Length: 171
Image 1 (tube, one colour):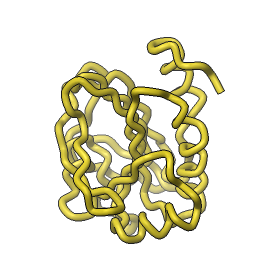
Image 2 (tube, rainbow, N blue to C red):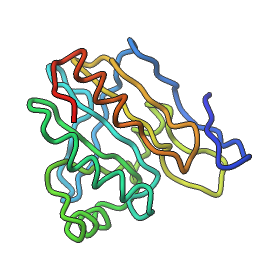
Image 3 (cartoon, rainbow, N blue to C red):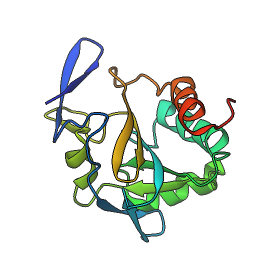
Image 4 (cartoon, rainbow, N blue to C red):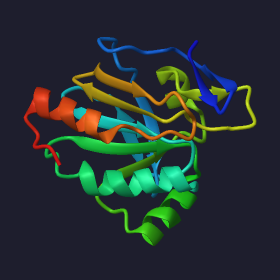
């Protein structure tokens, strides 16, 4: 079991800790419109970004940054995953003009958080730890777990990985 920090407090993460090279669990989540979205389908490449909640300053900023920076990657599905209700995600995306990426909710069953080892456990904070995964052909090929709850995903590191391994231009 892995953990992250909030200031000096350790926060345990529930579920299976995945590493690069592991099989990516297949999970079905719901988009902001309640449509199903499959995580780790065969033959696809996905960038999966998890946030505690879109309704926080850091998460909101990162969602907007994702909408601008990662959508130029063709043939790759970019999905932001949180435990916000799909209806709240819909309002957030409409208000913030986020229309280039998919948002998906793990609220109902917590399958993603549990199967990917990013579910915040035994804490006043509920939700998912901030992390980035790249899944290609059902394998984890990249993982970044942000160690501080209020920290940010290192987009430069993710973009460099995508550039080196898939030829995507650097922003």
